[in-house]
Length: 142
Image (cartoon, rainbow, N blue to C red; front, side, top):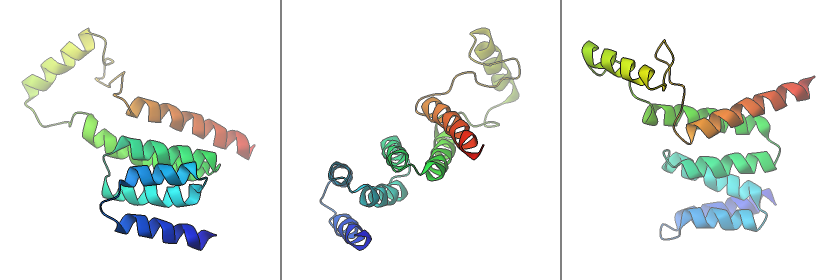
């Protein structure tokens, strides 16, 4: 059974005209979660900035009760999207960064140190899920 889903995944990925995301969703609908996981993992490698692929992969690992793998996907997604969505430090002049920090603090978007109090989506959702998953894993150990 494991061999068949790998063959199916390879056949779908070779066909460049097929809608890969729809094919992965079809594998999910057919109940072939392992094949869908393989498909989504290969799609994440191909399209690393597609948040929906990470979401589907997290959901499938949750359905399969593979919480450590889900946690690894969450960590990878947060790292990738933090680099993309959060502003880079040190790219502007001192004056501009000082004024920006003052304005952000004045409107309540950062704390006194300049750390952001709010994170853009999907980062906020993934960080919340990561916290819940950590609690679940620590409660299973005890």
